[in-house]
Length: 385
Image 1 (cartoon, helix red, strand yellow):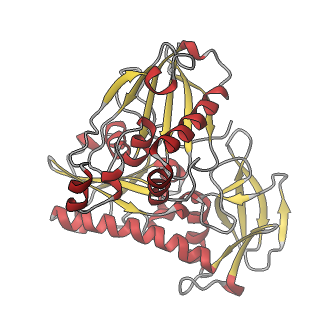
Image 2: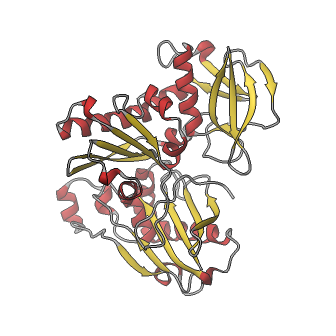
Image 3: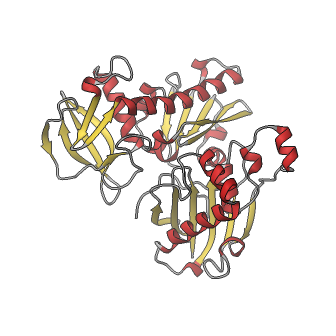
């Protein structure tokens, strides 16, 4: 029998097929963007309200249905589907009220009659959403949203790491378009979210892309040259080029071609540019760009876009610290999760301020679905089939 983990991200969807007997992940499918127009949750809300919530729901469900067909298995053998995402994505998936998420004013919400919308955890038959044919023997598990701006992603991070049992001040962050985070101080947990934008996942960058074959995922120094690493068809790191980032001279090619750069690659490249002195004053670059491969460049505009994302996350981190009443240097642990957080080099993230430099220990944690016990879910980094 199978289980399916589904992560409804703002920049795209990720789903995994899991063998419930062995707990083995059998196959993973992602989309290269969100099926609704726009690159952020406000665009998705606007489309749903303007065009119709039923239309938005239908587009999302049709996309998910096509993703499940990519598993190429008998879907009648799927017993459990666990879904994770922020409150907007989970609401669109379930086709429930979204206007309270779109309008912040209490008077407006009262006028619309959409106050106190229930977004508690739910377990229900898949036929409610997919009909009787697609997943006839499946139950759907939707974890609860913490608040209207903080969804199940933050909850899943807390459950999947040892965050909840840490006696010292600890911070956990889901690095995505909507960055959700939580700070634990003693028995108190404070949550927040930041509008990081798509740059943190490689989108909104001139040569950016989601994690998929050919995406630059890491950069390492070798003298005055940079070793460029890309994801192969198995989504493993492979060396692509040894290149001079200013002149574009390729000293050596290793057989793998780069077609773009993902969020982890962006952070790695910027951190190395700072460390090596190529960036003396942001966003200025030598000759206005960094060259990472044939036709693949990072521009000063890209530095600005990534800076906005990292700045938003850093501001949210600082806000949590101030609200908690602890000193910055008292933060003991920082956990990094999500597609960008799980695979980025923690020291690179520290250098850029994406994770607190004052945290004594930083961890990249790939969280995933808790299918076996029917708890909440998170699919972790999504890979292309």
